[in-house]
Image 1: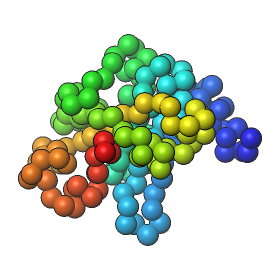
Image 2 (image 1 turned 60 degrees about the vertical axis):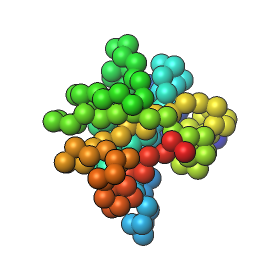
Image 3 (image 1 turned 90 degrees about the vertical axis):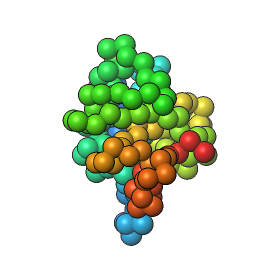
Image 4 (image 1 turned 180 degrees about the vertical axis):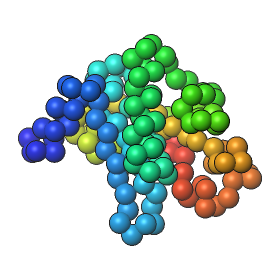
Length: 148
């Protein structure tokens, strides 16, 4: 076990989960943040947030964890309030291929991709979801929906 893995386990033990943020140094692919350990500590899916700053991603992940611990269950394709001020969010299941390629620390913890993960999806400031026809290419690139 290396120092990074030891630190992940310490965070999970102390806080119930850990969060990792990944960014493309060339700025081509969007930044994303994801949890490690929520499934282990609560049985709920891990969470990924794409296209937002690590700080906001971590805040959203913490809100998700707090609500899960309080017993809330999140259903894909259902709007939820209380995460982003003035905007609903939705969840979608992250496809296996994306879990394998993007959630490497969670893959390490669970010894493979045998865990569920939700993507927290946020609308544009105009209230457009990334899958809607009105969504710009830039917005779709900033927040790809990882269901396929």
